[in-house]
Structure formats: C-alpha cells, structure tokens
Image (cartoon, rainbow, N blue to C red; front, side, top):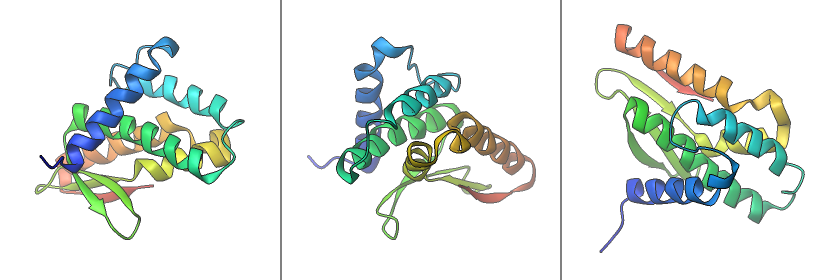
Length: 140
C-alpha cells in the first residue's frame, strides 16, 4: 500500500513528539512550538553537517506542519522545486502556505532571529486575514 505525503508528514511528526516526550509536552498545541524552538536552539551547537541537518529539518518541520494543520487545517503538496512539502491552508477561499523545513533550517543556522513561535504567529495572522479578505500569502 502506497503511503500519501500526508501520512508521511503525520507519521514523522508523531515520531518526533514521541522521541522528545522527555523534553516536554509535544501535544501539537501552538504553545508547544516554544518547546520546539528551545530544543532547536540546543541542537544548533551539534548539527554541523548536511545529513543530520536535513534530518532535523524534516522531523521538526513535520511537527510544525502538523501543529498548523491540526489547529488551522490545510493540505500538503509536494513542492518539487524546493524538494520538500508545503502546507496550504484555506483553499479555495484563501491560501496561506508555509515551508516549515526552510524555517527549521534557518532557526538552526541563524539562531534566534528565526524564532519559530514568531514565524508561526505570522502564519496565524495570515490565516485570520485570509478568512476575512481572501488573502493569499506564503509565510517565509
């Protein structure tokens, strides 16, 4: 049986939550993104090669995607040009897209200037605006 992109994202996010349960309550609530951000801050001192960085970006990115989808809805698509998934919320009334893998990479490489809760707040505001006005955006 072939798995869907959504199945893969959900499975990876749930594995992340289970694997780091000793670090806090990764319950897919928006508040849990602060725990994720703190964890990424710690990890950034240890992830220096591309392979481990890609793995962390995938695992933590899937967790962010699932926080977004479970709280605000959306559908996963494969963005071939970026070689990663994108979550699109609100179609067809509006469209707000996020590329969580890129944001996790930025958080690890750039530090706190790429704060995950701040990023997610931008996504939430865009979704709220979209519901009112039909707004379309990609949150980077």
